Picture 1 (tube, rainbow, N blue to C red):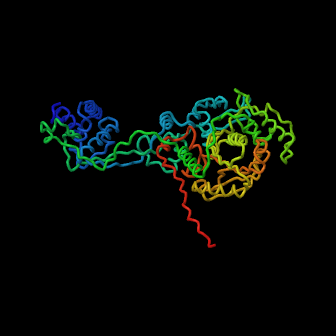
Picture 2 (cartoon, rainbow, N blue to C red):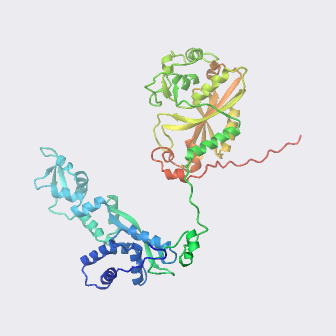
Picture 3 (tube, rainbow, N blue to C red):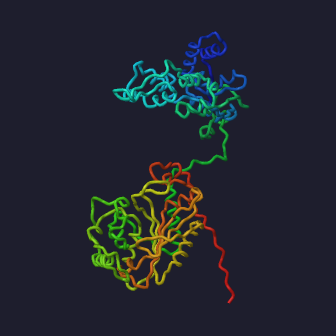
Length: 548
């Protein structure tokens, strides 16, 4: 098309067809439908047809009604409305929402063929029907219970060939089918709220929201459409054609197109914050690159007996291949064996026969404390002893029952401090400092039992979403039976704590179900929309100096 040309509605036969269809009420519905089908398949754009209809109307047009008259999809008319809106003040469009009742697929079937209970009633002959045979019918189970509650049928359990179903009444009226047919005919207002509610409970009826546009003439209304230019080209300037061309107004407040980029999952955002907090507190990250661990490092090195319930298959995922670990530090293994079976280091042990085969079993690690045990063992081999602060954040696996706060796979955060003369008071102080940096100040400590720590404490935080106290961690002082076989000095204590990554994330993001955060049911839009993790740590006032 040559520059400067524009579309106008010229085909006379279309105008005549439109004029006849609107003005001549004597035309048959079939002829009107054929006319609009011709208009739909014409080369004239939908926007042109909309403008012509709008020119002939008094006040405005409803997009849904126009789509029905033209025999085309409503979305095509909506697209034409939006394209005309982009041209400026040609039209004005008001978005309207209306609710209406529609039959579901099952509701349409019942409106056509009758309700399940009516079909069951009609299938029962005068001599009755075996209940087992009735239940095999497509509508048998639902229809039987409904027909029984309506007292249309009865069951004779004394029949020789088993329970038999008989009619109680000679005839019945299928009220369900009648109500659905009323709604199908656009007479839903004739039904009461209770009747509609019953149909909804049976999933035969649904309330849908229809969004349409009310289109009226704008201040710059015209039946001819000319495309507005969006760019000023060098050719327009050199030829001077820009003077005669309409340009689309620039919107200087419009946002630019966002660049494509990846999105961090909320767990990764919170993980980076945890890691930064540990680094600020002077901790060093431990290597945790082995999801598969031997039972020795996961249990035995922690002074956890081999008959402990946590080592059962109901709580732990064991591996078939490779089933056993081949390399273990045997001198250390012998000291651990002696501590378990005979005692030592001031302990009487567990007094049982410790088995190396049980310690060699491979499993998916149940906690990152196995990595802590490896790190402390390496520390014990370095002479002289040097105080350390370790941390780790990685994945662990447990055979848990799934609920709102538990998964079989989750992340564990662990902190370990080894130094001379550490006590439970040091542990509580470190925990309060750690959780305060997270912005979690509502804490409770509860005495607990762990095989490898004594004393031990569970850490609880108040969850605003669940409105209850939720366990966020476990802590304690490692037992001498765990530390001394490694070779650590007797006056060295190790305080440790662990917590999951998922529960603090749920608290900070207001997520009530862990399956909305991790797993195959996660809505990816949540990952895109979740803001940066800010742990809202409140700044502390500077300490006051006491007078000497």
